[in-house]
Length: 342
Image (cartoon, helix red, strand yellow):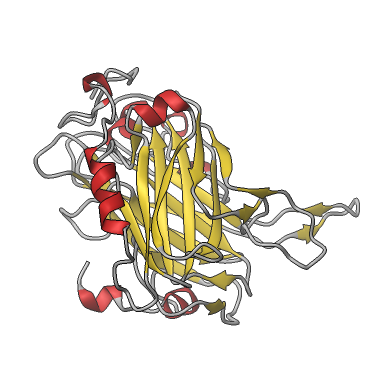
């Protein structure tokens, strides 16, 4: 992504009529409360599905020929409609299937409903969101706000298994108006024994400056149970990861189960109460951590400088024994831990 796109404010993206899209690990304007905006905006987004150069992996991207794994992080507010134009630049059928939002059978993204892109076909998928509302019986029905995700459901089979193993997945956030917006966002996907389709020491190093508001979006795929643990930082087990008042007694976590198909998100203040440094994130299933499911959350000094000892910690992390040969994904994105080879 070029500098001009990196500098766009998340506020302008979410408040405007243009596509409300934030690519993974994009830096936006400083944190604050979300702007007031009219409900029911329609956001048109073009997503391209392409092979990752030099491999047989496949990813979603916002530009042709430039897929990312995970795919772009899509955002909107409750009441908005996302119109996704999916351009299939591969020689295989594929689709895009969302969690947490409303859609009709034509936008299901499932071969069950004959909803997919043929090879080299462009197809439109419509996802709708809603606010909470009171039903006729007096009970309240939930809105769409939450940390969700999307993925393929048609590549190489009828259930999306091969597409997920290839890398066809990404994050989706539906916000309530007034939610606090972060300065930085990190999408973390646990699939089999990989983090974002990598194993340590090649897993992502997520970076923020001391005091920045950081948002993590955590997603699980594959066949294995995982947990997500973040060193030295905690969050509330709520929709946003934040407490609503001084008397809110929601459980406070630093480790949460991340099973296949699950997703959650939260915000933390980088280094709050602990200071800058290199902090680990990892799966707390110990065999998984041993086999390479760990990474680094680097909290730099407030001025962006490298904190004392952090580079040494990163060097030690890269020098540790991680994983087995069987756990390391090859150029196709497969491993011996996968039930479905590429």
